[in-house]
Image 1 (tube, one colour):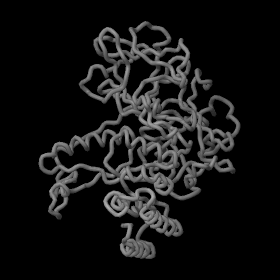
Image 2 (cartoon, helix red, strand yellow):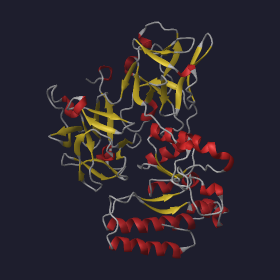
Image 3 (cartoon, rainbow, N blue to C red):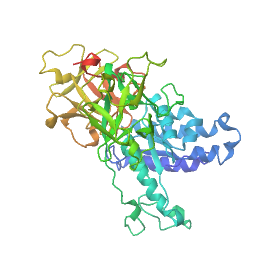
Image 4 (cartoon, one colour):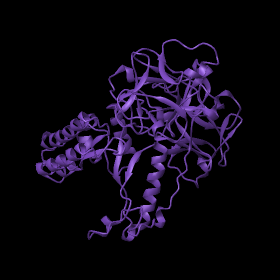
Length: 487
């Protein structure tokens, strides 16, 4: 649709067309990804148009676009349509008007990771997921090779960060006079894939790095949970693992690149690196396959650098923590002391306990149903019914009640409010994908946008409209390890 400030006729005509589609039963929840009410209308008004002098004191633009969004959403919800209704605009407009996050969950623009992470945190604070719309690069004229570089980097970032994004566009256009604008396609006008777009992205293996005293090795991202910029992005440190909101789960999630022997930091979008001469310094820096300082080997419960030094990662548990509660992580000659014992644990195998805030109940698989119980099950054979794994890359929540080869994952087959959840053999089915909101505690469905896990008072857990203030949707996740007081 096309909500445009000062052009009422355009929106009214498209709203009329939408009602006719609904009345004719031409659309349904399964075939529509979402409705975009406006595309960069705020940017055109506040940057290019009449609102560029008054700024945020001029509410005409934002009120017009939000009013149109509410009209469309109210109409569709009254007819039981549950797909997202969104406003797509530049990141600057979301910064200028943060209340957009309370209305819609998506936004689109070219981005850098550091800026995107800021908006990702703002969306999470509002209890929403975020999507990128209309990002791409032209292959026209002298920038042809840049399209392949940009697309490779975008696809790599999207895979490692689980970014929901829409690439602009599939095919080059045959119309228009501007060659640059016509050449954003992955395929040319003859439907042949461009040579610089023949790319393959391999997934990495998500892990935690467990150190002495029940601590995990982490790296700071670019944004803090208190809505401030981090002054030390990429700094490596150790602390207790994330167990519930608010926090930053991504800080402790590393991704092992087995092909290149690298450890990729999810929070900083960089790789772990040891550098220096006689003394070595541990840090994160932009990933490079050709950098020997970023290559590591797991040897006898230690992580050893594969550059000339061959030093081991060392967690300083002997000295008091820093003022922020963190421990120093360094790189020293290998000495086989407990400070250097580090366990690399894949998240797909790491047992977790998931609890609901409202009742203190434990997430439990009961006869194929998802429930919460305030008491622990008895007997080691039943322990798996209250034990889970969560893989933040595949986004699967798996029950530990069966062996690994036969494990079943939580699935939401229907995108409706109060929908029952089922367990099915773990797969790449989009209905099995979930996203943990580490700021609000919500567990969002990754593809049924706007729906979350809800622990109802009847003891069952349903799929329900997301509400960040609902204690039935606020969950904590605790790793179960001996040094964490678990199993």
